Length: 345
Image (cartoon, rainbow, N blue to C red; front, side, top):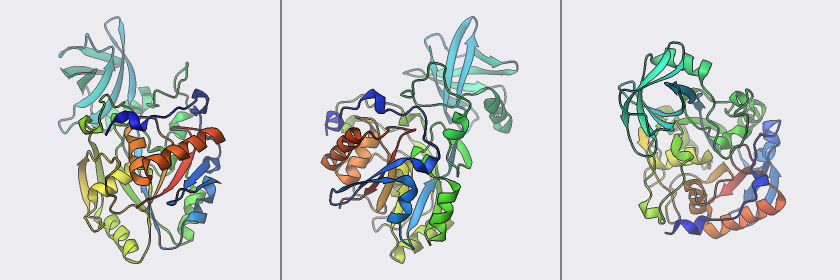
């Protein structure tokens, strides 16, 4: 289908550049399966859960993946996107035209990388002088949180972003973008949810650079999704299956959790243990096998994420919901407000 079917107008002033405090004070637009819209607040999520439901969260942790370096006298900015099994890293670099194989990029004293290969669109493969935990230590010291490009700050990311752009349950390092629907949770809200008899199940999907990449094709059939690594443990799969077997609903926090769950689902909705890559692309007409409710943020026009929520609720319904959100002054994108979506079967 044509990508322009998923376009909509959004005033720039509704793009949030900082989150609200406290996190669960964000607004939440509830989109019912019959098309009704309800204006709520995220801390009232418990009003929409019932004992026996399962809340699935993505516990990936964002690392400071953006680096400012030098090649000779020239400046280079590098964003790490994925680690390879051989210890090298896939990255986006700008400017990339002079980054040929064999060139060295210096980031700090004793912290450098060699360009091993060059692809299209600014992609390069880098080999660092160190790896493993030592590399992560250097990234923590010299790296910058990779905020999305639509968060326009002339002075760049702030120190507070290291806290704000991370979920309270982030644990497994590997993402270059936050699973932003989870940013609204607080420890206190999660404790209330568990106390009411809702299971909280942790899965992992390391969000990649593809979440920032625009669709450049005119038809969704021609778009190639970036693969992202994920894992659902046998114990978590069993817990979700048990909850479903007892009549509980599956609430997936974020499009990342949705894609991972649906990648691991059998035709009958049974979740199997999963470890590996997924490039699942959900568009209107796709069948959802396991997710009953989705918690998500407001997404970019013409993006794979807006296509996913349109697949879940219906394109016309989501366009109507977004039009309401614009009129009501909801805050959009990563640091913005939330949606609770009921699946339209």
